[in-house]
Image (cartoon, rainbow, N blue to C red; front, side, top):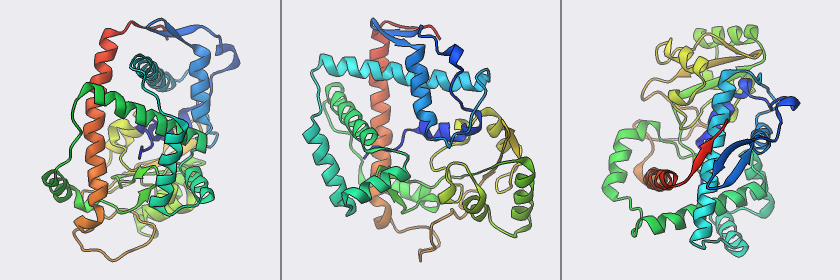
Length: 329
């Protein structure tokens, strides 16, 4: 099943930097042309505004250069969407509503969910059913497009699974999401309302009065709160520059000084390799991590996605090299 795109995770980290553009900026001018199809500034700002609805209403300043970086990322995604749409039309690739219904029914059976439970789980992921159906459709179209590029399946061998397990078993988690496997990461993230509260939390964590995960679950207003501040597969390079700089300034295992972003304060920590990851509840497991059988499917999905994304990106890069793309942002 498709996982939340990484850009959505990065967007969550830019909560304190993000906001819709001012009304004066919503001029309907062209910001990109892809094979004759136009993307307007209004289209772009509408996409940004739609994503902002998932960020708890925290805003950024429109003139912040990091906001421009985010908008360029979103515009690049919109350009890719047009390339995929154009290629799917050329190859007459479609995904029917019945196919989507069948995929969703299969998902509910696999996870033993009723329709209402499915909607509740999607809400936890920040998705509506309509948005989830679009993701299923896009994912299906991508896989079919890939079939035109490579006349073979993306294969993951047992040896690759075992090798991945041996290298990553200390950081694997059996926690799963209906939109894909959730992989525990090494970055801890806490966002609170002000610097004073952040300093107090930092002091408690450093003194051992509470763990970083406990503080995140109790006080954070940012992403990953329910997972103890765990940001999943987000890496340091994916963070906003001030967060990345703060994280690089402290050794692994220590908590950064508060980073102020538009009135909100952020604490970060980089867990040392092999350090325990936050979990919803303690479960008996070998000291070396979960057994291979318990995470084999997760590893296969992860490796499959890595191979698929690499092949598909090469395909998109090839399409883009042949397309007439003009960016005017």
